[in-house]
Image (cartoon, rainbow, N blue to C red):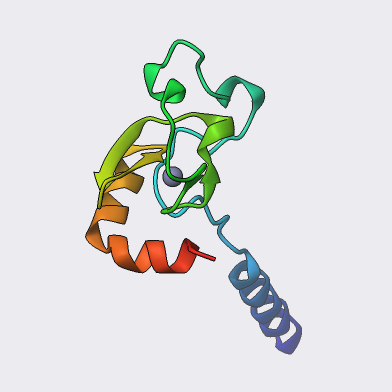
Length: 102
Ligand SMILES: [Zn+2]
């Protein structure tokens, strides 16, 4: 009888150990990074010059992966991989800029 309880306990512990795979913090078109996700040469947003090559929200290199949305903040143009990132940046732009200005 004790043996059965022990097995049940071990099974319970093992099933608790299963960690859920952490996905990207927000839904991104580039969750699966592959070459097909690299920037689209036909996208006019990729031809613009940005204040930074980095999407300040998710720290992705938009010069490499492409820009889906942009915002002008304090006279500078910033590119983002997605609207989600742009919105996130605009919630606290100064905080993001301070973090990335080095
Ligand atoms: Zn992003």
